[in-house]
Length: 365
Ligand code: SF4
Image (cartoon, rainbow, N blue to C red; front, side, top):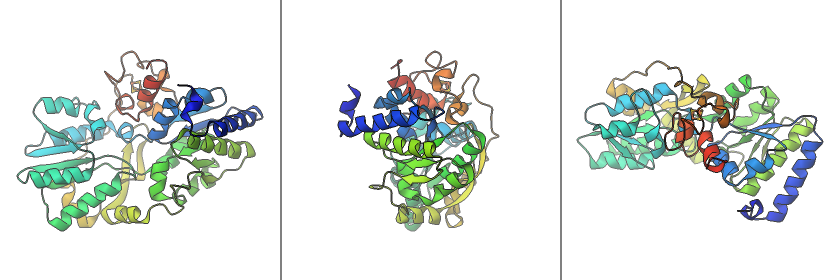
């Protein structure tokens, strides 16, 4: 489909692109922008914007795909949970095909483990109600967008006295991951911030980006014209040398975010260090269950320990992709040993993974 037909307002999109060209041509250096969110990664590729913008800027993907950033040791931990007798593991679909030391959850399911696909933690709670003799463990993966529903599920389990529901909380939060990323990757000139996460947390948690790193950032939406508008705003800030955080998605993201969802997170979780693929352990970037809900913590209830962090699978460069250090095609396995049909790393498994998006909507698709 011709690019402009993908825009609700083609005339505005063409005007924005002209402005972007002018800004980039007048700039001494070609800007490098990072889209933090996996949904942006896919949308930029699917709409063709990534290719259209490539003559003017360098677009890199970041650590915003929850499946992709889940560390190998946590993938192994999930497998360990699935191997426990009397346990039904409830998981989101993208997690099923991520390979770990024990193979994938799908492999374990084929070998007899009870692994159930769910669309939310509330489905897992329902599964626990339906299977009172078994223990249902929700594999809690996701960011500030997914975690409030997980919080609600745990609160409901507690209020209804459901004791056969547990949560393996591997939830992560975005701001400190960005802090760690910017401390390491000095090539990023601007950040395209995630619209969904921002709708929950608001604008304030990002202020440090401009203050500590001197890097401008723009919150934007997912329609093609939203992304283009956000990118133009970001390049304007870069060219003007103004490190600010702008909200270009005000119709969805309020400055304070969603107070109800934030309250749920604060009641049910406490911040802890989390392991991120490619970024290592980052303080206060994970969510463990808060003390009043400790009985629902799968690690404690099942007496399991987190395995040691493991080196990446041979040849897989997902960690570098997630830090914006390389493009997916720079991995030697891309589109050869690693494809969506036979993925080696999570960035090729997840529908929001950079490698899968580049493969599907690039010249390989
Ligand atoms: S192409 Fe495959 S192996 Fe290479 S970084 Fe991407 S997911 Fe990992």
